[in-house]
Length: 357
Image (tube, rainbow, N blue to C red):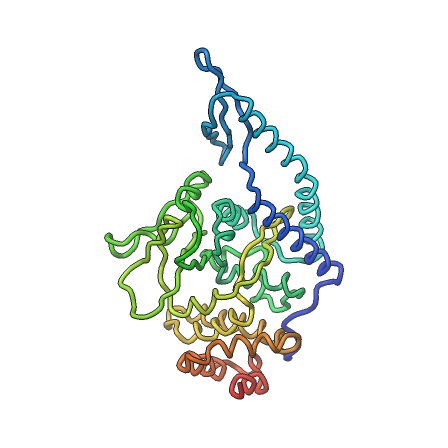
């Protein structure tokens, strides 16, 4: 396969649709952050001689009611204001749905329904709003849409087989994110999430699996300094995360991007593409023989991204490589990974770009 065969550009109309949807999604997220609205409907109950209001939501077919307070003019004004604000925001939400559907028809990569549903749960829990970064195969699957390309090699495509290729949704988390209750949100989603037991009964779970499915969510956090003997508890999210070396490099300075379903979209954080590619090169050399196939996938994904960036955004590679200036051992491992791979993945000029930087 020639050096130019790994990607083809999406139609210009598809690229413009993506840019428009991304802009609308960023504006909507900022508006929601500045003026959050509760989801659900307002329900009135008469108990004895009093009237009381509840916020009712439905999750997985199960209704939940949250008490708001006794009937009063102030509470009614607040509920009227919420209802009116929802009405004003509805046209923008409909427009985002229309754009997502058009993108799905315009050759953009979309997620399967199970994966998209889990991503929705994570978004509802505030994971991405609070700085969580999507990592792994599912992050790579979204880079094509973001960069305006479609990967030509079948092994690089995630559409239609995302869970079969990699059942784990990796979420990188810093320790100083805002407050949320992620386990409670997963439980309330009522789609069968359960913590996966760790090898040591003393350690809390860092992964949650959907019963009856391969799909799971892994929570990760940077490992800096001496190795840790177990998971790290993040009290602001009420979840434990597995510490990983070099994750701090991967998730520093993330970019906002879209996960696309067939008729809707989610705004998420992805690693910088150049850092993702370099991290994949480093990871490929650290996998044992039992994970040889994953090492090959690491190299394939790194090659696809670096070739694109070398052609169209070389400064991104230089910046990501410069960020490793104080980690010479990581740099050596990355270069060794490139040299171990076949020449159809990493051309001589690409290797020299790293060596000369």
